[in-house]
Structure formats: C-alpha cells, structure tokens
Amino acid sequence: MSILNVWVSKTKALIGVDTDGVLGGTEHVEFSKLIPLVHANVVFASRGDREFLVELFSAFARNPIPVTFDVIEQHLTTVVAGIVVRWRGLGYIADYQFAIVGWSEVRGRMHAIWANGNTGDDGIDLDDVECRLAPWHDSLGRAPVTDSQEAMVAAAQGQAAWIRSQPGAAGGGRLIVAELTCDEMQIRSACNLTT
Image 1: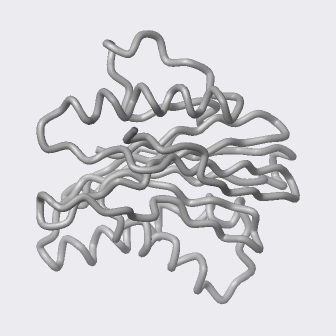
Image 2 (image 1 turned 180 degrees about the horizontal axis):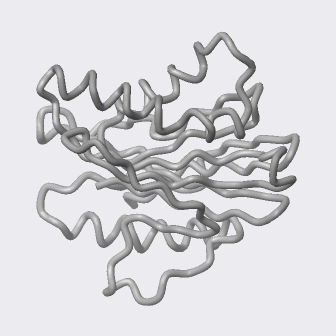
C-alpha cells in the first residue's frame, strides 16, 4: 500500500509519493514511485506494481512523436490497453493506480489525470483531479488540501502511520515531493516517514 498524493492549481502542482516497497513479501526496500519526463515537464507517479509505472513511462519516453502532457492524455487509454493485454497474456493480473501531472497547453493550466484499473479487466477509470490522497482512511479524519510542502508532509505522516498499522502493508520510507509549474520542476525528499 503506497502513498500517492496529488494537488493541482492553475499554476502549480504538488505530487507526493513514499519510497517504501517490499521484496519477497518481507524485506522493506526503497523504490522510485515517481518518474519525471523532464522535457515535457510531466510527472508519472503510481501505487501498486512499480513495473506498470515503468512500462507506462517508457511507452511515452521512447515514443518517436513529440510528447507533451496533452499528447500523453490523448493516447493514454491506448497505451494502457497495450500494457494490460501484454500483462494478461503473461498471466499477470494486478491492480494499478497512477497519476500523470503536467502543464496542459490545451487547457492553459496545470492538470492531473488519475487512473485506476486492473490488468484482468479491459476498462480503465480516468478522472481529472485537483486534490486526491491515497490511501485515505476515515480514522485519519477529513482529507486535507495538500497545497503546500508542509501540508503534503503532514498528510503523508498520517497516511504512513495508518499504513504501518495494517498487517503486512508497505508504506513509508521517505516522502518524495515534486513541485511543477508551467516551466519548472523541483523534486526533493521532504521527510522521513518511518521515524
């Protein structure tokens, strides 16, 4: 269970992910759950199987056509369908959840797409989001608006504590926060979530 938090305004976006992952069911290690496509000023971030994130990112990073946020959005369902068909052919069924965040020339603002699906199904649920925190549990209270680095840290600390209370769950490590504007991207380790 990983942390994936997104907040978007017209001019700025914040994306937060944790780094904790599990190998072999028991060994906790750090994984990257956020990948920037620097030339397009776009960030791909995910929860669930990290291989899905890598394949999704690679499909656009290796694409021979000029890639922008709007191009990614236009071709997203086709690319995801291709990944799903390949995984299903290999007998690998898994849930996936990801966000793609960047500057949309079409909209003239920052924008985020949130996706949920399972490689055993043909469909994908896509939402335009302004603020979403995952996971979020009722015991954490009302989900805050994570419109600053400090708010992103506070939310993630609560999420990490809740995740660690769940048997066998992975979530914690460091909180990595990306801040995007129309022409700038900053990525930093914002805090340690396991102390």
